[in-house]
Image 1 (cartoon, rainbow, N blue to C red):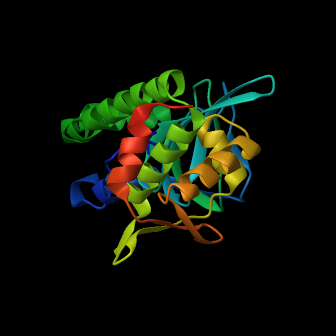
Image 2 (image 1 turned 30 degrees about the vertical axis):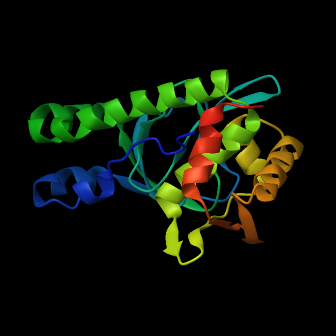
Length: 221
């Protein structure tokens, strides 16, 4: 399961001299861990870029939650959607009115060349998530989560790929669309297979990425 919304970091794009005027229009806002940054149909019609920390983009209906993606520094999103956005840790964002952002993009065609791949990444991510939720069991979704985390946070060591993040088991469960208990059982299964080794709080060793990929591809319950 691809947890990252897009592969393009707009924070770096905003460092370009020709985009200095756009960067000056953004305002910095900070939120504490667990805070809901935006709710569905929020009256705040804003475009924002994640500056620090991570946030969860999800849909909610009654007691069920469906995680669409994890927003990381450099990811861009807007507030006028049906999704909730919740801080997974202390975060800061750069925001500006959608109308002003749209006008700037219209006047600066070069920025559109950056935005088009972003839209493609969003669509690809959504299809990947839907495919995983429909066709794969929880253990495979957990395996896909760790593969995605390895790609984003992984550090090579002689023993394998080491990843460290601040997500709890409950937060991982929300990302893969399951419960804390079921995800704990899936993690135990992956440990017994020697594919994931817990090294401490938020630290995991993945000694066999190819084996983890093969397991994730099985779609098993």
